[in-house]
Image (cartoon, rainbow, N blue to C red; front, side, top):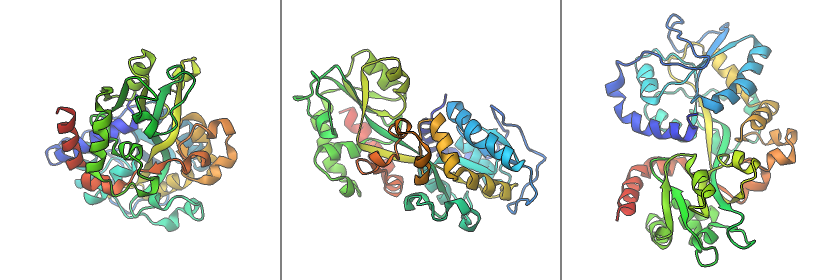
Length: 370
């Protein structure tokens, strides 16, 4: 499996190499993806198109999309869905040449800010997205060039047998190594954005006062925990390994990564207070050949019943609140956009991180090596 968050990291690295990759436009697809070299170009699309090509990151995430979205969409509309799993430099190269071999992009909402800066995506026509109207999708997810699709979150995880029956209830508790002794783990910049927000929450900053981030204050807070951080994890699976081996007693983690271990009986749990939510979304590349079908697929995915079906097969939360009326309490409790979790977590500020990521990453690297 290639995690969608790792996929985002590859984008940030690959975007700088777009110019060098313009000649490298051969399609490397997997799953059900096939080449559509003969399907034509142009951005007007076809009202009678019977296929649409979607780019996603593959793995079990791609499998969930196939089961919950693509197959039901084909059954409902007769439009066949093809899938490609290509990396970002290649996507941007194809778009810049005017012949993208995909009609829809499934990607992080953070990445769509960069796509927009590259003038690689079209402004969405919300009149063609009828299921988005009055759906109460968060305003941060209904942007000019992308619309939200599913939520995920970074949360705290801990060993339930580590603290004599106590459970850390906040990032302040994570930082409190006297009340909750033991080694910690935090995310490396090689995995995704530095977790400055957690450091600020631990230092008493309110959820609704996080942005713009006080970078100096965040690093001062990080200084206080640095001596207890045994490992800065760089893959989504590593927190589970560290916790399972008792090398650490608490760690940040991408929610969902411990589900299998918990089901197997490992003494692990998530703490949702202070969860950092991010979202995947939909965008349409400039030059998409099957524009009408692209809009139909996006609109179909925003039906409450489709949103609920996806959440049942993959631990990412619906962006359409009405989907929760169709989910069991057990399923809902394990999702980032659950009503029970919305007030205790926060949405990552995509615009702030896009503007500040390079400087923060440089400082993080210097801090971890100091």
